[in-house]
Length: 69
Image (cartoon, rainbow, N blue to C red; front, side):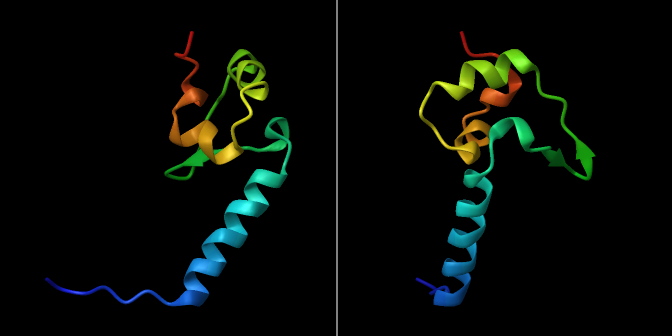
């Protein structure tokens, strides 16, 4: 099996960026995809605020789409 090189500095940079994103109040973040701003409903943000998840989780779980009941 082939091996992949991973530099520790890269991991630290990724983690620093994640911490920076998660530090912001979700209501003060503008999310973009392919250079275009994603419109997110206030309802989706309000529902998310009380989940205890991170801002990054808001995107990775697709809660930003507002489909969750």
